[in-house]
Amino acid sequence: MRRVSIFGATGSIGQNTIDLISRAPSDYDVVALTGGANIQKLANDARRLGADLAVTAHEDKLDDLRAALTGSEVEAAAGANAIAEAATRPADWIMSAIVGSAGLAPGIEALKQGSTLALANKETLVCAGSLVMETAKAHDARLLPVDSEHSAVFQALVGEDITAVERVIITASGGAFRDWPMEDLVNATVEQASSHPNWDMGQRITIDSASMFNKALEVIETREFFSVSPTQIEVLVHPESIVHAMVGYRDGAVMAHMGAPDMRHAIGYALHWPERRDLPVDRLDLAKIGQLNFKAPDLKRYPALKLAWDVMERGGLAGAVFNAAKERALDHFIARRISFLDMADAVAAVLDRFDASDGLIDAPMTLDNVHQTDHLARQWVDDTVVERAG
Ligand code: NDP
Ligand code: MG
Image (cartoon, rainbow, N blue to C red; front, side):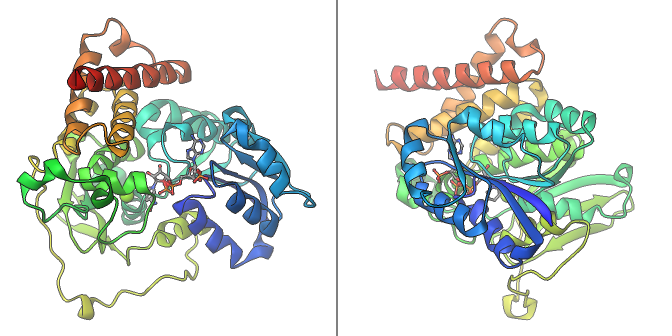
């Protein structure tokens, strides 16, 4: 039996992971499940899977969680520290699927115990890439990608020599506003940005797909995960979301990874790696699909995408600044305080402020510095929003 824990168990990735595990319950011993506000779902899954521990991120929900677990043997806990502690409980395979930079600390704890960390939380690598990779190396832990593009790259690299790689191409669906007239984007609403043409995902990543902040994070994630240089990374808009990524080699060959847009592909690959096992996903019928389209991204439509290269050029803590500023700008958009297009402007302004701030740009990458930078960048976004409102 493999001991598994799922961080962000109540979310979109978490639930897909539980779906796969539930199909072969005797193969898995569930150690910890964590969630946020969705107490009932967390408690139900913890009971059903016989987890040792269930943790909510919200300290004020501990009583609710305890009540929901009454009569079961599942231990209840709450708060960010309890989530990080849950990551120290011995497990062979840990899914990192919390949304946002809150996923970083438990991810590091999981690596410190030498577990295999299936990484959906891309923010972990964007905020602290070098720290995470060094921690994994020091503790002989393995990182497996779960983001569909990175799983695709990982699979297109099997059996190949990384030094023969010329370029890595990740695809983007183009999100909710791919075909909108540019002049309408300024009025785009939260509801409109929250519907994705191809993928069924959590709300925040769906909005990030419409703005391509998600793709910007994924470009940085590609650099950190595969140690390729920024100039080797390309993005292609591919409306069908069938080809998830391609790896171009020095002889001109390009290996493309295809699959139906279902996250259980990438989750299942990470769960069974290095084997391939049956997965309950649709099989591709290319004759039915008929056509696959590709085009270069329009950086005027997706100003957030270009910022990825600005961030990689800065290096160090710039990724933490970028991610935190993006998260905070998204909070303001969801709260309807700023417009859809204001998000990229606010983040660009924060990156400029980071350049001008003494010492930060050269500060070493420690978990403390990442947290402090994260906090500061959020404050800077708030300043920008207040300034504009005034
Ligand atoms: P969801 O919003 O659906 O789920 C997020 C999970 O994190 C929930 O369990 C939520 O709890 C929990 N959570 C929220 N805030 C906190 C917090 N502060 N501390 C601890 N836990 C918290 O997100 P997704 O499943 O869509 O995405 C998860 C991660 O995977 C993200 O990093 C995303 O970028 C990445 N990803 C997602 C893909 C997808 O298809 N969905 C594809 C590729 C990557 P609750 O809901 O109970 O409040
Ligand atoms: Mg992705």
